[in-house]
Length: 252
Image (cartoon, rainbow, N blue to C red):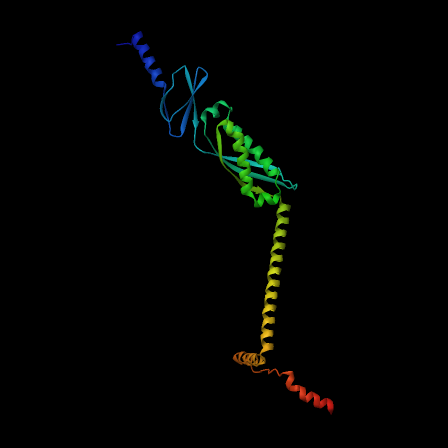
């Protein structure tokens, strides 16, 4: 049997160490390299070499991270207690800062997002939370982006997902919405009556200027009544025709 000599064993160990230092990084990955404790910068993507025993690599993911912000108990400026949750989109722009400046950038960003969500929503009234979400989203994103910039983090987007209202507040808002709909219906009805009265006044003015128009309208009414095949037809008689008879009866 053939055995390996000391030189061959040493050669195998050296080759294994050399091969172990070869690292392959994906397109969205970066390697932050430390040499004897000092950072030498980020490498990648592709093939890179880490000197075994001398250099240490921390792998960073450069893709956008989607983080769910848990529901937060918030008291609005008008003293309404609600639960608000949101979703946060961010990515690492500078892997060196993300490793050196903060211990765990994912945990730190999550905690900062929760605190900022409570703070911003607490400064707004309930109506603003429900109707001005875009402005609140922009405000939260602006604060988070400013606070995470020293960590090499870029906050891409913040969106409020759900606002959980108390049951009594939901009932009050339902009553308010119903009252608002009734108010609009009454206003629309009153506006319709006003427009109809204006049209009737215009028609009366035209008829007053043209007496024959009243006779034509009378004949048209008779045609409409006759088209219904009624057994009884009512003929309205102008008061002017009865005036001579009324005078004679008064003289007699």
